[in-house]
Image 1 (cartoon, rainbow, N blue to C red):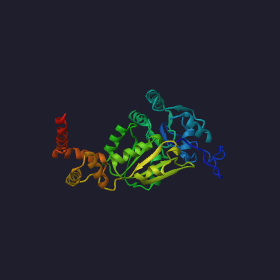
Image 2: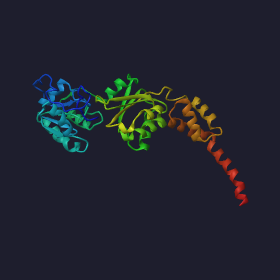
Image 3: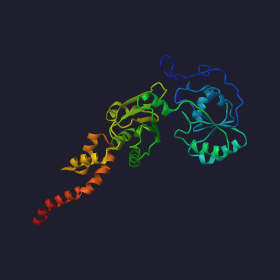
Image 4: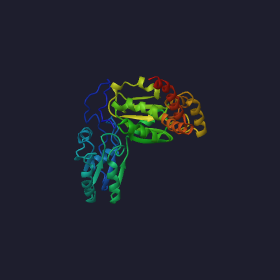
Length: 328
């Protein structure tokens, strides 16, 4: 997710970290089996690397990275001399056959992302699928994961959750995606760029209703921040200018039932539609019930067609305008 940063010194300021300062027990020289090793790397604090990950990265034939420069910084800290090659969304189609050919020849290949666990919102999945389909061994080297790290400290329900990744950047498609997720039971976990965060929060209110939301940023770094609050309070608690890197956004489950029984919702809407436009009635019912406005709006349209609410309103307007037309 975020690019690895160097840990702070005791004084609290960042400084260059020597390989001596980061030294651990010398890496073992295991006899690695041929295959694809999916290796987790630190989210931000370079010390969050596992001993097994170091063993693997030292002893594979090649490391495929999202960005060779980012992985190069980690490699320099731990004196990893293994050659690195780029594998990302822009070259995946070209590089995948080459990686599969290397695996077929008995190579030991590591796959890493810039930070965290590969395949969590990155292009590694097609490679793993193809490797397995071709009979190659695929090994996990587990470690840091931004969604799990954020979920563990957010204070939202964690017994059931759904990882969503990035939602569409455009509001219309993003709202539709949120609408599709409205009935999902449990906490929703997604990534978002800081510049789009205010728009995302607004869309969550519109499509999912009043929920508790957590925003996590700079995980494992000096300025790690996790804010959990009712979504209506979040804009005032977030300093948008201070947000850097991708944020992990967690949306808690609705406190109210996701769906009222049809009769109950219809009764609320019928009352609200008396003397109000559909839009005003939807806002009134959504605010009172805590249900997502999109859900209430869809039902309001069905109900207004059944009752002729729009037709009655149009007829009323025409009757008001007719005398003016006669005078002219």
